[in-house]
Length: 445
Image (cartoon, rainbow, N blue to C red; front, side, top):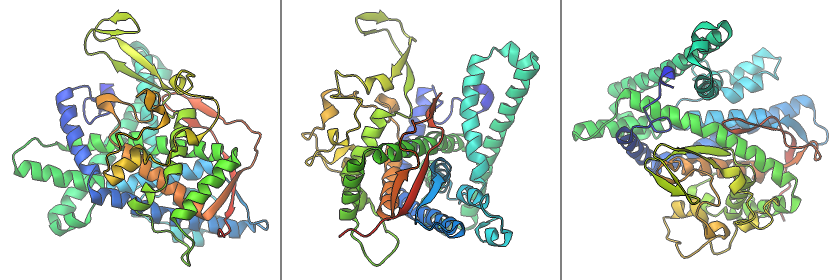
């Protein structure tokens, strides 16, 4: 794993506890600032308006007489989340949605309206990150002799190394540009709330106070970690949410009712979402949790025992690798009633704000338990222990924001209600495609 350049730095691929602890401190401090979370919600609003413009343009060009627009939702939500995570992390606007929209547009003069030569090329960078993930598996499985001397494996290895170099170079360039920008205009520090800017600011303060600080390589690795863990996991969860609510109309209607109660109809065509709004979307949060139980994006993870331990009545030596099968835990009848039934109500209690909403409100609800609390790890969405995902609040913010924006404005149907959900499970459980139809919703009475 050293071959790809980021191993031993940041958090996800770091097994050095001392440096991992420092990196975690800086990351948690950065993404916990009010400015960062406000920025994440603001960017979701802006990007959905851009997405809505693209959809309206396609609808007009296709002359949809029945008011329904059919699309491959997989392509759009992947690109929406790519651009969303890009601008929240780096402050640089992505171009993934624009690039995909332009594939439908033969009129180059019109497509130029959406062309921004200054945009960071998220449409190229994010697939490179996914290639990196697949490369980790390849390099762990294929023997070094094959990678060095057998032409097929050698070519594949070289492609992976070139891809890793591209990722490192792109992130290094971002860091250098931002540091130069701040050196030339220090006043801009106060107006920048993306992760890169906050990390640089916090690091400068640490250096001034002569406390533990980060190198540029550490900052690069942290940015890469959030790219690695951010866009693909959230976008796949949103695919599965669409699939399950469309197959359960009563759940979809209950979700619509909650969104309409939080965002009453007004004269404006666009919503202005805040953290207070998101904290009220209790049923939407329950849908996310139940979807993650039914279809965990990370179905299995691995942990290494740091010392001799006893599990299931057996004594295991230090450095034993345990594979944690979340997908099976989520379907275990010992913890779940009717586990094969999609039922968000199992997480929806009127007196329980839930994990995410606790964070938003800074409230203490230790005495308010949801159904799965009879076993702490019967539901595992963001891992657990000291490696609990530090970006879980950002992920929930992004998904809840999209649900509110999408379903306040649009009704949605599956093109083929009888078609099975097509997925591929590797490191992640990825949706392979989902064709839907959308149309504007009528204002509720």
